Image (cartoon, rainbow, N blue to C red):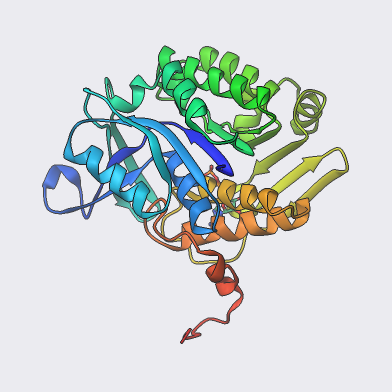
Length: 315
Ligand code: ATP
């Protein structure tokens, strides 16, 4: 039985060493919000199954091999005739990264209800948690229906649903995003959002009102991510805030996904909210302190590393 089932698009990712238009070299890897969370969780020792599609190309092989190497279950990663999507990262100046997507018509965007139904049917037992993000429904009608089907099947099987709102304004018009994300957040047991995303995905005039509206529905927990200022977890027992871990930020992309992996790991381990939050800000800090979306994420044994004094050699 997987601890977590997640679904979405995983793309090949090219990280240019300089400006793309000038040519030169780029490093190849894979990226995608849900895959980042999946890898974050497997590094911490959890069992994760991934539902998605890649193209019949070498980028698809790269995605499949990477997920498999990281211990993510790829039985439900289908090979589709369409090509694997590509995302290009270009650090334009220190602290500012240009992100260019080539995902129109990609395999990952052809995720369907059948993919989700087949994945659930093939599981020996239902997952404990379904993790979804706002990226997948923004990819098109098919992926949006696939997310709905996943929520329906997860709930019917007694799994908890975690939604990371993860709004991508370039993928869909704001009115549609607002409608779909509000519907999904009303069904999720755990809603994770940045301050802006919370406003998009819930009713209410201010943060306390928005949190109250979600906690009055299906959600038992709402977690607001605040970047370098840390995060706050809201439950029926009140609010708990935790500052970010002080680290030298090298690459902030993927911090939110790393944070979610840490939070879900704490939930799976049965930790109380304060300790879930502590693990989440730790995994978030690992992501910003290293290069790549997921490459720097910690194993369970590495979690205490941020407590070591600067200059420590771990032998
Ligand atoms: P992204 O979309 O880039 O993945 P996000 O907007 O979803 O990020 P953030 O709020 O930026 O998510 O970051 C998530 C968590 O990561 C924060 O709550 C914090 O704990 C940690 N974090 C982010 N930035 C920093 C930083 N500069 N230093 C330390 N920790 C950070």
